[in-house]
Length: 365
View: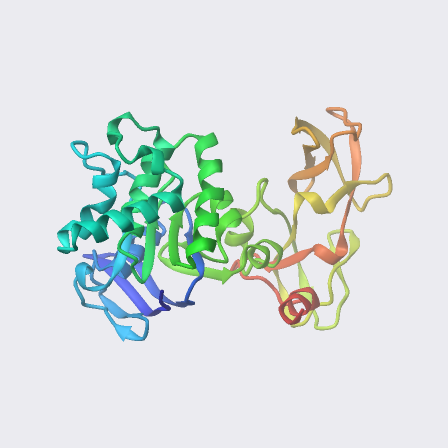
């Protein structure tokens, strides 16, 4: 397999810039997800890596070789699309072996490769079946098999589970990660679904409006988001933001939040009086009679072991994840306490996270 290096990649279509200045490295054998909303530039980035689009500026290196302007066929990369694009007149075995047939490989070698690939995907029993009769999950396995059989340097996948229903998607997430671990493939996976990215990827690049906002492990992007966009995009429900005005000084362990003092992780940068936002995940909120922030319960969503309770406060609506056994009445006034060790602070103007001891501790931990 191979390392993929992207350097200052940019792609413009007339006056529209789809990708702006992306730079990152995908290490050999990594499952790397490009995550973001529709139109953020993730698929365009993938297509440039594949050679299906040429960049306006920047470089693409595959295993140390500059392939920026190489044709797709010359990059030794396999692409799996959302639509399976299987040949309906061929059976499963013929579909999987077709790329090898195009390369002129001997029949007995094709047969061995197809059998090996089918075993890995657990579809040996389907090799003689027509693809039109298969379930969506099995057709996706066949599409993966056709990519795998060539043994390329890297696999690129563009929303490959998007056409499946929720149950099949959940199943295939586990299957894809298991397959990745067995073949040790370098994989670049595009999705708008944060659950897919969080459950499968080693590293996630979160994109917005053509730019990479943050790259990190699933835990890093969830626990210490680099900006408000990432904090809002990752998590269900997403991070709550409580806005306030004030200044911050390096070394402070508490902030003036409206008419109260709130403990926060030690602040590691000075910030003049500005529009700020306090970020708190729903699971880091609890009800407390003496809570510093008070509000009225608006609604509750029962989820089995937990419930999502929404509370209207003077600073906006807040979502809290509480045990399902917690007693909640719509309309009651409650006090809220936050886990001070897990709070985040943001500059509301730029949207960027403010450096605290918590982020530094996680970075060195």
